[in-house]
Structures are given as C-alpha cells and as structure tokens.
Length: 263
Image (cartoon, rainbow, N blue to C red; front, side, top):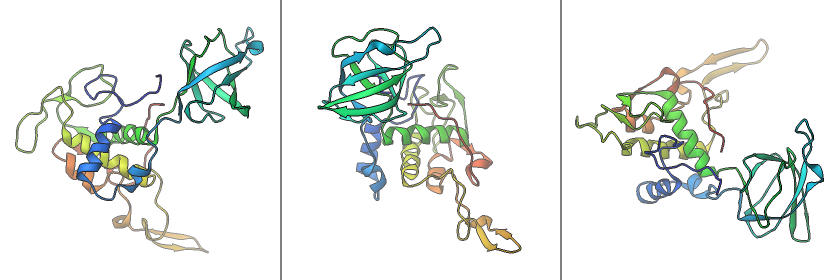
C-alpha cells in the first residue's frame, strides 16, 4: 500500500525513530495516563478501496489542466474528503480530491489533475495520509532532531534522521551500537508524541498563568513571567536524553515551526 508509515529505524530513509507498534508496546508496558495515545486514530484515513469506473472525459489538456471523476467502491475503511491526496496503484501521479459525492453505495471522487492514463479494473486507490499516531511520532522525531545537538556523528551521510550515530555513549560510559537507535531516543520519541496528542506544544502560551504575570488594558501593559512559560521539550524528555546531546536554547522556552515530511 502507498501509505507512508515510519519504517525500520535503521533505514536511511526512516522518518520516525519509533513505529506505531513499538509505541503501543511502550505505552502498554511502561506508562500510565496514556488516554490521548489510546484514543488517537491508529489506521490510515482511507484504504482498501478499488476503482469501479473512471469517467475519462476530463483528460488533461495540453496545459495539464482539467479533472476526472473516479467512482470508488465502498468496501474499504475510512473516508475521502475534499483536499486529501490520493494515489492509484498503476499511476506515479499524486492526485488531489476536489469534490466528493455518494450514490448507490459508490463514492464519486473528482480528482485533479485529470487522469493522464487509464485505470485498471479494480485498481487500488488509497488516501495518502498517515494516522494520528504516525503523525505524532514523525513530528516528535523531527522536534528531537531540531532541538538537540546530539553527541557523536551520524553513521551515514545519506540518512534522513540524526540517529543512528557512532561515538555515542550511555550513562555508564559504554558506547552504543552504532547501527541501532538507543532505547532512550525511542522512549523520548514516544513521550513527546504523547504530549503532542495532548495539545499543540508549538503554539504561544495564553496570557495570564501561562507565561505572563500581569495583563492590563488601557494603557496596555504585559509583564512576562519566564518561570511560568511552557517548555517545548518537557523535563521528562530532557532527562531521558540528557547524556546523548545538549538541548538548544529553543528547546526550553518559546516556540518555533519545524520542518515535517508530508504523509
């Protein structure tokens, strides 16, 4: 299936340090108060559908414009919505759904750009979107790599993530296996993913009691209370990985937009 999920951590193309299955096991065996994780969607938004009919009157013109209505059977799980991205098994092109309708048990998707080639009978069609759990793990991984200067050096210059690394040591001074991601990194990824599911840690804190000691109207005055602002990276996560790298200044106060991979 063309759904992008976190792949094996040792892969140079991995986009998360932890798979959903590994995170499920971590929370099940070691953690209390995981409601946000337990309630998060674990399956992709739409999969298991096949194409019944494509109305090809909307083939691309010479400028690549136009759209096509694709009729999809209703045997899959999840749903398609306007704006979502979809993939078809025999096509390299990624399409965007611009309109949807439902009739006689079949879903009609208007997709853009228009199909540039025919579809096979019963061809698989999938919504290219990860589950909430996948997205949280990917974002948590990106945040850790963004907000920490890890000790040691990357193993492969082509790897997407900053682990695995060589010349990294555990708390007792023993070197980590250079081809593996330390358990502390995996656990920290799980903890940060849980926090992301509990609320957006990248937004600015609200006023009184979340970073400001006083707010006055007319004339306007704001007093910043730095001891009461929310850390981007929690103390729990900090303690898990403190021996593996040094946090940047941005990790402890304020907010910042980080790069993410589309799924």
